[in-house]
Image (cartoon, rainbow, N blue to C red):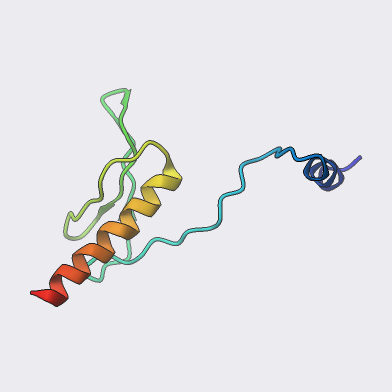
Length: 87
């Protein structure tokens, strides 16, 4: 039995062998820079995931997972752009 067959059989019975997150692309920073870093470990202790712009230092709120961190980054960028338009 191949992996694809195993996944199909598991799906029929309502099981999930792997987490299926949709692909989320990171939005460019407010400054227009597209290189975003994702610092995760500081001083040997694990801290929450977050994204930070390499150019201007704009950063998102901390999150528990990488997936959640991407969502929060996109949300922060969107909110900052709306504030910029309203000002």
